[in-house]
Image 1 (spheres, rainbow, N blue to C red):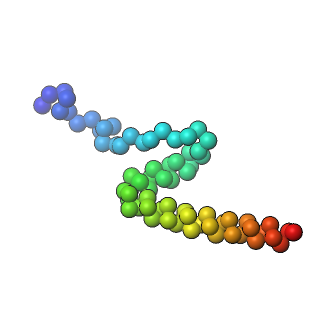
Image 2 (image 1 turned 30 degrees about the vertical axis):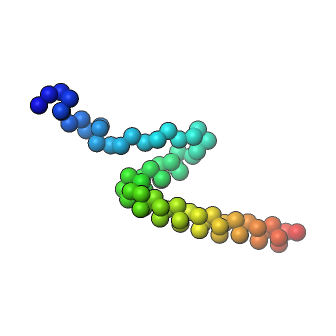
Image 3 (image 1 turned 120 degrees about the horizontal axis):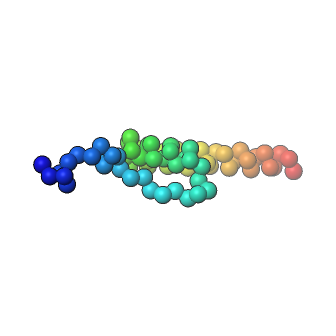
Length: 69
C-alpha cells in the first residue's frame, strides 16, 4: 500500500462549508449535524420544520404588535 492509499481518519469526516461570520455557531452546528447524520432528506425536513416555526413566530409577533396598537 502506498502512502497515497493509506487511510487517514480525518479524511473520513466531510469538510464543512465556510459559514458567514454573522451566523451563530450553534445554528451552523445544528444544520451541519443534521446534514451529516440524516443527509439531504433530513436537512429538507429540518428546513420544512424551520419554515413552519418561522411562520408561527412571525404570526405571534404580528399578533403582539396588533394588541399593542
